[in-house]
Length: 200
Image (cartoon, rainbow, N blue to C red):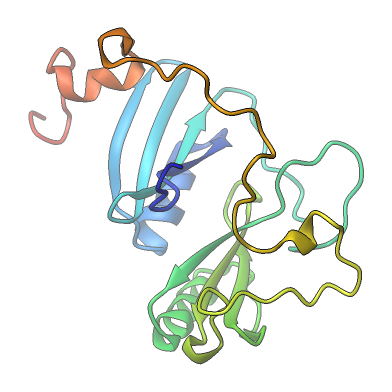
């Protein structure tokens, strides 16, 4: 089975990349590490931590979503509730809370969830965001726990992958048949387009 090391990037949408840069880079302190684009389209990446990013597509006509409380039940087509960013310590959580509040944006009080302490806010696109600091001695990654009062039978099977629930791979792709097709991000490394930060 594949070994996962985290989320390489989350891809969001914005109608105002400049406001998005001001919030994610300048207020939250996440470096803007890559930018692709042309008139009418941009795709920018902000570094959360090494190897982990949040990216934004800028498309004409995209409007901020209405703010909705994190974790509030919803109906109809829904694929996303909020994204939580881990921070290193309690001081980081308080620093972020103070910075967001000083910027005139709404930010919650610090909430104790038992295994994490969190604050909640929204970015300029209405995206619900959370910042969480682990309570080390209560981290469920050390000893997974399921306290749902009515878990499904699939949930009761345990925290690890259950073998035999999906068809087995009959013929793995041999190395000599593994073809990789060029994608849009190649322009970041090809040198065919002007790099505005290296050659202004």
